[in-house]
Image (tube, rainbow, N blue to C red; front, side, top):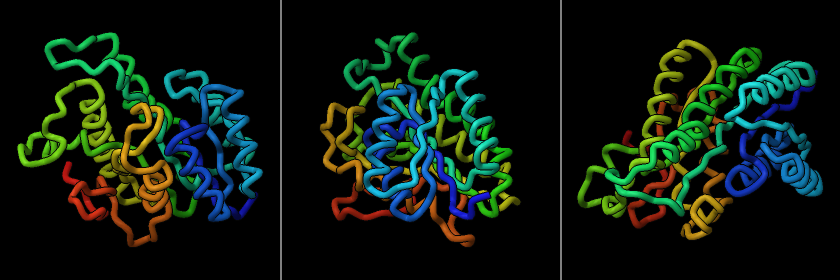
Length: 250
């Protein structure tokens, strides 16, 4: 069995997920590139390998129970454990922003399938492998728009953003993170949520003011926490005008 740390990143074929996989690979880890689309996943694996990473494409659609089960079995058969799980796969439906009164339930269900239910499905399937690692880390990639404190603060720059679909999915993900953290508080597994900030990716038509690489730094920090690192926090970019990082209020 390899002594290298093994990290799975979902939605790793582009954007913050790809940047996260690359940064973890640069740290000498074996990186499992989770992606729905085989061609895109294999292309990401190839690009990471050309950059020197020990990368392996894993076909993984977080909304498909059979795909999740196959991915978990392959990781178990080939590696026997998992040191880091980054639940990065997500959708925003940014082109279909609607006010609460105009919310499409079909769109709401679609977003929740990936951003919330998919995280639970993948985490539950891989938790036995995470328990086999000496000190595993789970990082759920969330967002400050899921913070009740921020979105209800009239003085915050994000206050004008009014939509249920994406923000509420991240609020739910924050609670999911909190509950896993409580369940695993007496184990060696640390569970945290990452706030990468507004990064330019396909999720927002590349309109963000931060790069995917900057967003990935937040996730990588939480994925490589020491044994005395934080547990059960939403941590990352603070929209304070200073470019600071720290704990983001739930």
